[in-house]
Length: 311
Image (cartoon, rainbow, N blue to C red):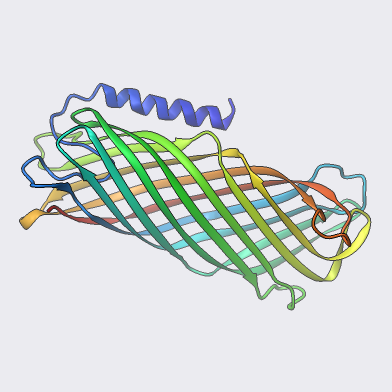
């Protein structure tokens, strides 16, 4: 079964589970103030640790291996660091709500492993230091279709940039990757799973069976590499993409504190996949135009805590 279809089916199952919920507490995407509060607004600050072995994995694979060219260029590196996130859910007396969010991730520099294979030569291997900048913005509409079940419909902009430096071979070389994601999403959240315990437990998932965005990658190779039978000094690749998927699942366990404060522990899993075809040399007359398939997989786990204040 295609992964994109699996994502759609999984999200649908989660929504159906939410429709069967009968608990009577207020639910939502992010914690919403109880009905006794004057305004249904609860700004929430999340802090967590994210990690994933080979969490970033992207490759360029030639579609026609006949010519003397780079057959595949692949970079893999771990994702690890600190996440800070601000979520502001706003809700009136009705079922509709709005959630605005911003997050910034502080990745630790990691070692990237590059494999470059050739159609007429042996493969080359080298490592880099990968320095990543990563942040996103999102907005979502929520609708409480049952007291503890919420439908979510939103949009996220995701900015992911990595600078590769200090290679183990050919020290003067550099590489840069920029991924811009324009991600519509839908999903469900179910809250107050354990009524009577004094804890607010929420689980949910969002996603979309298509990944929209763009990729821009340039690698400088001072010793030269073959592309389309010509020896060139780098590998430039850029294009938009409209294939792939986005999926994110989350869970929280919270409890009320004094004076409108609430604290919670959370866990989240997030992944994106993107695919497009790159015409290397399309914007440079000195490089023969050669077609490559671009594939990106990025995934992380996040664990941490949240504090919210009702007013």
